[in-house]
Length: 120
Image (cartoon, one colour):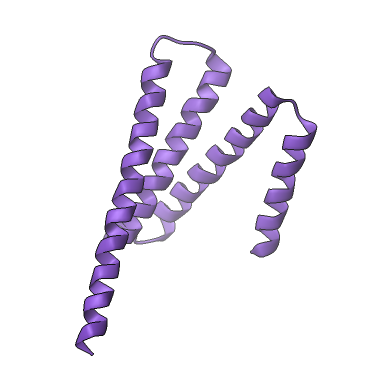
């Protein structure tokens, strides 16, 4: 697993060093988008993510990140289009809300763990 992350980091660094700024952003956004959608599909198909708050938080954040990546890539392929700004703002808002949800879930889980620890 560490080797895969190290290889991905190395490829990202190579893209940054070798490619020009426009291509860097596209390659990195494409990688982010593919990885995010891959996680969403695998997690949805193989896990009971709906059964826990943490699972829902992970899925919603990953889906929001995938949608933001898709919006960034659509801008690259379609150029300027009339609702581009609105879509991008909505995707960023959605991602921010899902991160807030993750924080709230984490605080709830940590609060439950603290309470369990005090009763023992």
